[in-house]
Each structure stands twice: as C-alpha cells, then as structure tokens.
Image (cartoon, rainbow, N blue to C red; front, side):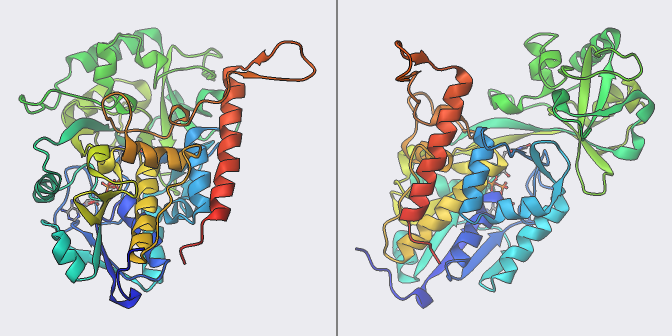
Length: 465
Ligand SMILES: Cc1cc2nc3c(=O)[nH]c(=O)nc-3n(C[C@H](O)[C@H](O)[C@H](O)COP(=O)(O)OP(=O)(O)OC[C@H]3O[C@@H](n4cnc5c(N)ncnc54)[C@H](O)[C@@H]3O)c2cc1C
C-alpha cells in the first residue's frame, strides 16, 4: 500500500471552477482535505463564459432528464446518492421544465459557491494556471492536482498538458450556443404554452408555431444569413447532439421540422391544428423573465440572428439577451494517457476531470469531477480507488474515459449503449419458447440492473468522509 504522509500535510489543487472542478472540490473537501480551487475567470475570460461565477452553465440551462428510466436520469440518481454538490445545487435552483432538470443559472452558481465555502476547507484562488508541477515537485510539496479546465482550457495550460502527455496534437470539435430571449419581448398572441411533445399538462414550455410558408421562408433566411467564420485551417467537426441549426439545414430542409422544431403533440389554439413546425422556448430563470431557444444553437452572425428571428411573428420585436455563438472544444485522448483512477500515467499525482477528459455535457462533466475527486482522496490516503461497476451509468462513463472504445475516441454523453447489453430474450417457465425482449423491456432491464449494481457498489465502498 502506498503512503503519502499525514493528511494535514496534503493539499489538493484543482484547476477550473466549472462543473467538474466544483464537484471535485466538494468531494475532496467533504473528506476533510483542504482544497485550493484555481479559477481564471473573471481575471481571464473564456470565449463562451459570461461571468466569474463557479459552475457557470455556458449554454442551455438544462441538465437533461430526471426520469430514472433514462440514461441521464439514472446518472443523476447515482450522483445524488454519492452526495453530488452539482445535483444538490441544481435541485435547489430548479425551474419548471417538465421531466428535465432545468435551473436558474444564477441561483445554481450561488448554491455551488456557498456549498463549497461552507465546508471551510475550500479556498477559491482567482487566476490562470499556466503550468503543472513535475511528479517530483508535487511529491515534495505533498500536492495532488485535478485538472478540470474544460473544453475552453486556456492555451498555456493546454500546452502544459500537451507536454505532460507527449502528444503533438490535441483533439477538438465545435460546440454551438443557443440564444436566450427576453420573455417580455415575445408576442404571446402568436405563441402558446404547452409541454414539449405534449408530455404532461403543466404548460412549462412556450411554443412559437410556424405555418408551412413561414417555415420555408425561415429556412431560406437561415441559409442566406452570414455565418461566423471558422479558422480556414480547421476542418469543422461538430458534436452530433449540439449541431448548429445551419448544419442541420444542410442535411435537408425538413431536418429542423423533425428535430428541434418538431410540432408533435402541439395544437395551435388559434387554428385548432398542429402547426407545420414550432420553436420551443424553455424558461431560463426562476423569475420567468428569460427563455432559451431549445436546440437553436447557431453560428449566424449576431445582427443576422436578430434579423432572421424577427421574421417569425411571435419574435417580431424580440430582444436577444444572449446571442448564439460557436466555439472550439478541446479534449484529450484520455484512455492513452490516464490510468484506471483518472490520474495521468506519466504524473500519478495529477488527475483529469470533466469535459476535457472526453465526456460531453454538464452532468457528465460533473460526474467525472466526482470520480476524480474521490480517486484523488483515495490516493492521498494510500488507498485503492474502485471505479463503480460498468453496469452503472457513472461507472460506464468513467470506464469509457479510462478504457476507451473500439472506434475513434469522441466525447461521450450518458447513454445506455455504454452499458453491457442485457439478454435479448427472457426465459419465462410458463412459455415454451423464450420471449424476445422489446427495446423498452431491454431498457427497463438495463436500468434495473444498474440500480441493483449501484446499490451493491455503494454498500461495499467505505464512505470517503
Ligand atoms: C460553447 C459550448 C456550449 C455548450 N453547451 C452545452 C449545453 O448546452 N449543455 C450541456 O450539457 N453541455 C454543453 N457544453 C458542454 C459541456 O458540458 C460544458 O462545456 C461544461 O461546462 C463542461 O464542464 P467542465 O467543468 O469540464 O468545464 P467548464 O464548465 O468549462 O469549467 C472549466 C473551468 O476552467 C476554467 N479554466 C480554463 N483554463 C484555466 C486555467 N488555465 N486556469 C484556471 N482556470 C481555467 C474556465 O474558466 C472554466 O470555468 C457546451 C460546451 C461549449 C464549449
């Protein structure tokens, strides 16, 4: 067993106070270990963040579904059981959004910060980290580091990571941001409340219906609008679940109508019919003064966004509070460089967490912060870290990051495809032939097995505090 000295001599430094870094800081502090959380904002901003707040949500205010039979819901349940600060803060900051866990981003960030400060063990240090200690330096100083600097990691730190891994090429793709609108500027005589795809009857979403003519004109305008240029030496690679609307339109004029503008389950009260297409707006803050355009990531230039969206009757006088935009997103080929506890093979006192490790999404990034925080605690105590089993959602994601996949390594969302497949048939003694399971039955089996495996893992691991 490794020993790393007295706990009072140990300190943990975390680079990045985003979703992953804040969660990691919480997990370390709740184990009684002092943490210095280095966050470069507001001293140095990223191209997408707007504030100096911890755990700022850069785009959508939704942490996706809470439904326990879905992969994102399962991940949240597991994280909540592991005492996740991010999930706790999100529940506190919740705004109405049907089954989705959407939050007021200011209340959320405040809850994360106060949760960390209340531990009395977290020091937030503003400023950019530009280098990482060598293994000898970290060991001599009794330090452990967790790098959670996110997809918009500053260049000097990206260079330091490149040096650490010996890799000559970092990986990247593009992510786009959807606009946020002022609620009072939406013309409600051309919009109506209804739940997404007709789920439930709480009317949490605002829907902006479009006729066939309006939809076709809108598509033409988006195609004609001026877009933000990407550096011409970079091939544009997008993340499939965060495609800009313009890229979706390139795949066909009806792609939006079958995607984010899908009108299924909606009835326009003015006509009594299903609209041809509908833009859905999700409440952004607890006061209900801001709404975001669901799935409307865009790389149109800002004046063009105003011009194109104003063509839609309900948005004729729209005030855009935050414009859509597009950003480079960097991540490392983690399975090549990390050991099974998320620490670098070349620098075992330095851990990697969050989106930069090759996951995609707020909750997924926080989940990797949770695991890296716990792994760091274990190593600092000379204990072995046990990754949750691959049958659990958090364990499957952790193993994706450390073990990789067959194809090219790409940022990964929580999804049931990461978990081992259940049997294709069941053997019911009352039937002669085995019964072939439906897709829904298989999902239920995966979720049930995940719950049982997770419960067994939780009871077998000693709490870290
Ligand atoms: C443009 C864009 C839009 C996105 N939209 C969504 C979305 O709608 N929904 C979703 O689920 N996911 C989205 N993502 C993906 C991802 O989930 C988020 O980026 C998420 O915030 C990642 O969490 P993280 O903690 O890894 O990184 P971040 O939350 O970005 O936190 C990293 C922190 O590190 C800081 N930092 C960087 N370099 C340094 C340094 N050298 N020294 C000190 N601090 C540093 C940054 O300021 C930042 O606060 C988006 C990503 C991008 C880039």
